[in-house]
Image (cartoon, rainbow, N blue to C red):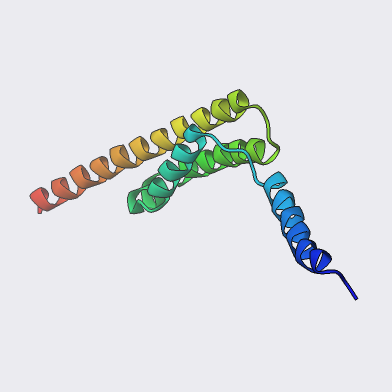
Length: 116
């Protein structure tokens, strides 16, 4: 018959082992990477981006994937931030291209309406 100490400590030991194992597989992250991910989601939810800047969005997505991979590999914070910064700039470019092309399309539509 097991002692009461063993009955209590075995589940606790298992829980601690699982907890430590889970912590070791958690990717590293930084505030800049988290902000970049948020910016990416906002760009992804912008219909103008899908319509007017799909190539730029693809490039931004690839850049963010590289930053996420660095975080998963637990690279240095400096490297993660550097890659996140590049991705953030590509996301900003994507949004600006979408705005520009959307504005150009609006001008063309208004010109067509005016000429009718």
